[in-house]
Length: 244
Length: 240
Image 1 (spheres, chains in turn cyan, red):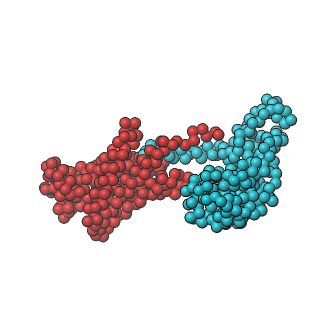
Image 2: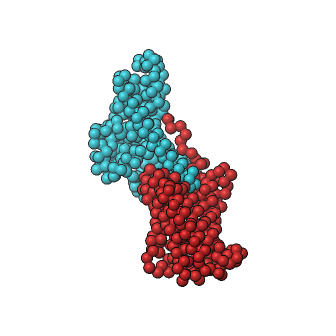
Image 3: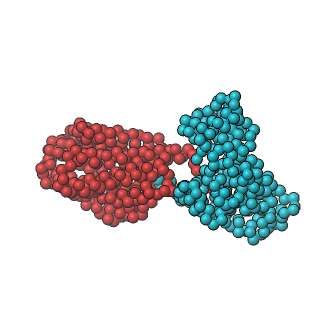
């Protein structure tokens, strides 16, 4: 869900009293038609607000805090947990570390450059939800947001999570309220208060056993995704080759 | 009026459905379905009075055109049946269509069609043999003509419905499957209704031709999905 157009206009008149809607779009680098459409519908999307805040040099977190449902965002920023940090490392990087350790090119305290791929990665959202889940996260999330569980699952499968659901998930899990917005790519890690070297540090801190099981779990997820994709490809091909 | 309209609509759609597949033929894409659509186009054309009278007049005015129409329709259902069973990945439907049962039914229906055609008194062109409806052999001839399409359609209804309910499939394929499932159901309902003494009146034309329209629309959707899908292929490297 998004913020109301009324609240948005109020905020816009405060941060850029002289600027027209066109000016705002130019500064934020968004299409004028996109914002116009959102205003007509009475709902302005959260990414639009974040883009405008960035355009005017405001911290997006503080900008979002103006709107209903996000008021507690600035006070809710905490350092991410190690589980969250590790969840945002791609499976390729995890395997690279595993290989490095197997060849005694240990990283902790040494000069091995991990050079982790930027995140969000392909399974960022689901991996984060699993990392912060105290056990009944999905159920409580469905109850408190009114979004059906199948809908939540569909969002996670597609690698998406609506901003207000991401924030609510962080509230329930008791982690930094910006984490969900970082792993969905709405905020940059810096904007969300994630330390730049946090992921490498958390990853290197894993014991061998944990690293191996982490790699196994990630490969398991990947294997299921590939099987699913190949099944879908096979179905598409059957349709196309026979009837197309 | 509606009956005539839907016949012309069906003819137009068949022509379009076949025409869009011509460019792909060189690359050996969709030859079977193209052949089925061409046969279907001819069959539909022969169901329309002025075309039938012209063609049958050329063939000698003994309603040979009607016999050709029937045989072409069987071929259409055989080709569609094989391809649809494969597309819906239904082993059972495939075995029912091309297995011993399906082949036996087809052979019997063709034999019956030929027999009743020969034994009927059919001098003078008449679209759908309407002028000869009082002959028993002509009625048997028509009944045999509905049997095979009805059988193949019945084999395909369940696989098509299953394809509609498949939540993982592409939306366009589910929509196309819904058109096809509707079409097969209509054929089955039509064949069953004709077994009862109910007088279908205009529905006698509307039902089968709406089934043709739905089938061709469904096939066109899948052709469209294939054409679009060739351009943007899915992520090639699944490991990243």
